[in-house]
Amino acid sequence: MNTEAPVLRVGDLHAYYGKSHVLRGVTLEVRRREVVGLVGRNGSGRSTALKAIMGLVRPSSGRVVLDGRELAGRRPYEIARAGIAYVPEEREIFANLTVDENLRMGMQPCPEGVPAWTAAQMFDYFPRLKERRGTLAGRLSGGEQQMLTICRSLLGNPRVLLIDEPTEGLAPQIVAAVSECIADVHRQGVSVVLVEQKLTIALRVSTRMCVMGHGRVVREGTPQEIAGNEELLAQWLAV
Image 1 (spheres, rainbow, N blue to C red):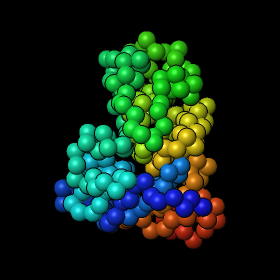
Image 2: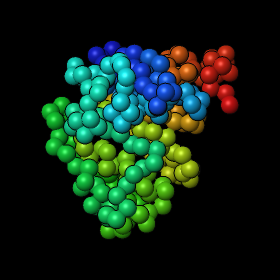
Image 3: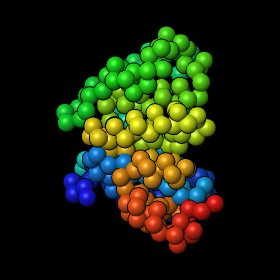
Image 4: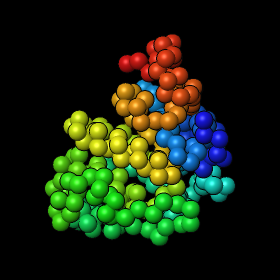
């Protein structure tokens, strides 16, 4: 069990889309070298929770604290500079820039006590990107764009990496490469919050899991505890 103090604390986070109350008091903690899998049915608030942590959806109330620094309500670029990186489901690469140029766009100075990432390490994770480094990102396949988005985020040298649905629509061999990258990133000391629709992948990659329902975390535990709780699976995760 990881007994280190949390790197990221999210407390009683509420957020709306218009008049729709989407997040209803999300509370979770993330420690160093953890992959916290955020799972639940569609509409449970998982992706919105990541966006609210990142400032892309403005929380109406609640706390987001990174290493003791309050970030709730800050602008996304301020949150990024503080040490949180976000890999969106939509990928949002710079289509008219090359792979190399996209990676350079993500590079930031490395704070003390945080793993320093290099483009060479990114190419070790995903050799295909090295082959395509001079290619415009808009011409990459969906899987290559997903690799590029993860790498660009890592080059910001974050303390916490938020990843939203990274394996959606990808071929099995690319899913395996992305999963291994996430596993190695957390071993290097970066904390990860992973939203993943495929429960089998979330169970394999995560070190701890939080189950969301109705806009809040309803249960948390180890992957083994979650997978072995048939009542929980039926109530909150079964389609």
